[in-house]
Image (cartoon, rainbow, N blue to C red; front, side, top):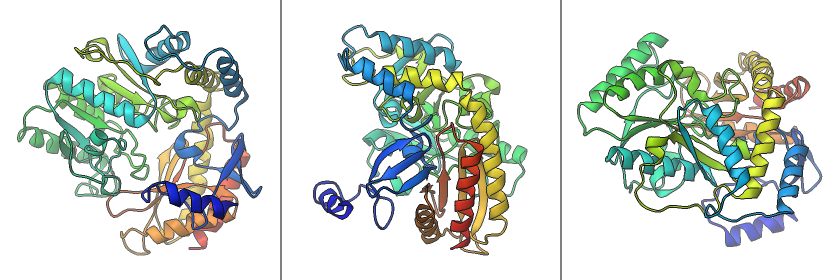
Length: 427
């Protein structure tokens, strides 16, 4: 049946729509941190639908909220008052740390970043944007134009002038040999020099931890140092929290808080985990920025009642059960376990990350050359062992991406680490 579905998939869907595994997988249902395929095989899920199943599969509170809301009304658009949307916006605005915050809901992270770019360029009257090398911000025409990862950027055409900044990757590039303080100083000097060669940009957009790029990040405080330079020139800071938000990194509720010395960003974008699988994205910004548009705008599906009900139930569960604390505790155990394994596997260059957002970079032994074939082999071997993980990487890199639901137990972390141990040693 799976082969038949694969043939139908290839007949009607784009060739560029990527599928994992030599024998692609159809997931039919899930519960907690586990999913099952069409053949009845059970897997421990360490990727959560690309970091989207944030709390748990089939979380009863979310299922109940969706069912009850669907029994009343699914959707009415933003042309009508919408109680669940207002209630979730109030919660998100309060949690954001942004003063006088306004929230606009979208259906995806791509759309959220697209909206943030619209707001920033309109507010600043500039179409120049600073972005990080190795970054990924979505698949729309404008977000592809600011993506610093050639593997996910199918065109050089863009409505924006994009300038790429150093700093998103700590252990590669021209400043990798420096200590953290000198690394930050060098990146700041590079930013200042760059700004001396261009008209004033609208904004810097940055992922606190780069997701598609392989869970890379700069030293804590880099974006705070950037913020000082940007603030002097009136340039906005957009934090792309699509993958890092809601406590996934364990140490902070938002990824930007590792760089929070200068206060919150001007704009924060979010998506993925807040809906626990439902299509929710959004933008948080100070009122003066959010309200800068001088034309009518609505969202047909952003903020629809059934997704807002899911988001509220999911956020309540996350906070009431301290899943951020669980991500810190269990993620810390998992990353140390994986570092112990990696020390005995020549293909592993680095195990990095924080909380339940962990990357394992693979290279050809004795070199810094990417080993994408090794990443694919580990992906297959982990699946054979009953574990689903992701992969990523930017320029000349290959990495495994590990991001389970944030309710992961210690026993499940140990089970997943044991499967990864065998998979890595099988390369």
